Amino acid sequence: MYLTQGLHRSLQLNPDRVASTFRGRQRTYREIADRVSRLASGLRALGMADNDRIGMLALNSDRYMEFMLSVWWGGGVLNPVNIRWSVPEIVYSLDDCDTRILFVDDNFLHMTQAICATAKYPPLLIHVGDGPAPEGMLSFEQLIAENESMKDLNRGGSDIAAIMYTGGTTGLPKGVMQTHLNLWSSAVMRMAEHPIIRNSTTLHVAPMFHTASMARVVFQFVSGEAHCFIPMFEPLEMLQTIERERINETLLVPTMLQALLMHPQFERYNLASLRRIAYGASPIALTLLERAIDVLPECEFMHAYGMTETSPVLCLNPHANHGPEGRVSGLVRSVGRPLLGVDLRIVDEHDNELPRGTVGEIIVRGPNVMKGYWNRPEETAKTLRRGWMHTGDGAYMDEQGYVFIVDRLKDMIVSGGENIFSAEVENVIARHPAIAMSAVIGIPDDKWGEAVHAVVVLKPDCVLSEIQLISHCREHIAGYKCPKSVAFVSGLPLSAAGKILKRDLREPFWKDRARAVN
Image (cartoon, rainbow, N blue to C red; front, side, top):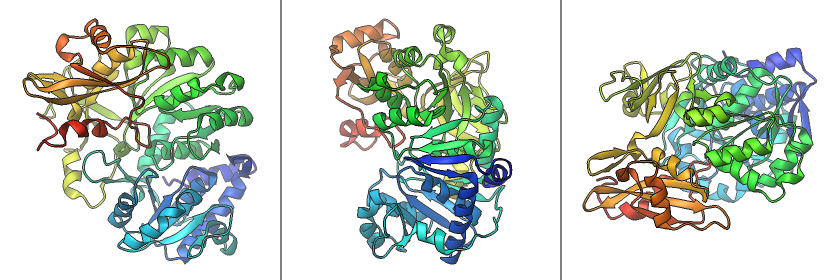
């Protein structure tokens, strides 16, 4: 399959349905198809050939979606640039996959001079915005206006659709090669497991350079439903948009959901249209889930687990496991069961499948698994071994086939010869009513090798001591797993996708040592 097929289908079935909304601007499927074919034609006129990489450095918008579709229509490959990166990091990604054309919106114009000055091949710049293009840049809207439409090249299947750079939390970022089949099959497998909400509108607030948000856009197009965009997550604008546009579904990380519920104007807005919230990147704190269910009683909550290398979803935990029974049974802490079409095993270091309930590494195979890492054959071979992708995630599977993540294997803390998985400790910390967020890391310890250290954020107006928190943990887990020290902070460092950057938390403790583990 090819990723523009959903656009063709919608053009055939519902050409005059509103397909996209951005701050009051609406476009139908007929209008989008025309704009996409013209922009693709403009890109080909600028020299884009089959499989050429085309970059986008921008916040969310309807134009970002049109960029995606037009690059695919014209036979190119997306390079969605991480908006949180510095200029050297951006240039690294452009140089690494030889990106010669870069779309830039008004928010990042200040970076273009430095990008062009330091890139191996200074990219041709295209301005994404309403006003005139700055000097030295071409105009997104002018490219559409000045070019005739072209026939869709229909590249698909094993052709590369996107090179998605990993967050770079360890070493240099790697370019994950996602094919048309990878992204299309991921959308269809999710749809088969959890049917879409018909005649729905999804609000895209997570950054579209991230695979979860980009895949959500793909899902909406495959299913023929409508899109609404805001530039980035901002609680008040999100509340206003849900009410105004009658939004039915959205994708958030738990930190975003918490910020939304805690906004002082939350109760002023009518959110009755909201029917489903998918969340990922981290488990949800039970206190946050209970609050969300209480204030959004008609809304379903669904946990998606996956990664960039799997385009992205592997497992889904349905709303049924988020209610009282799921909370009592502990299924709410699961990431769910593998999607239809995903083979998933828990294995030891020799890839032998482990008994249910035993912690090992998740390995997977399926049509959604990446083609490999761009120009990194050795790292590709390390990850894709014997027909299986090795995720590096430590987990166990229960007798019903539910998967429970315990940690990234590389984040495991080894203290006194005992293996401690930080997620287990974080789950216990989250049960304390004074805790808003937490992260558990291993820090150097002369006696034990590593010691468990908790970094926590308290809820407003709450008071908690280190001794009280450690005592709370001792009530739920073995003493050797409990934090030996606690730091109280106002906030945790987060990636653009809302994940806690444990690397940043570890760095002060390990910076003068040859290794980051003992």
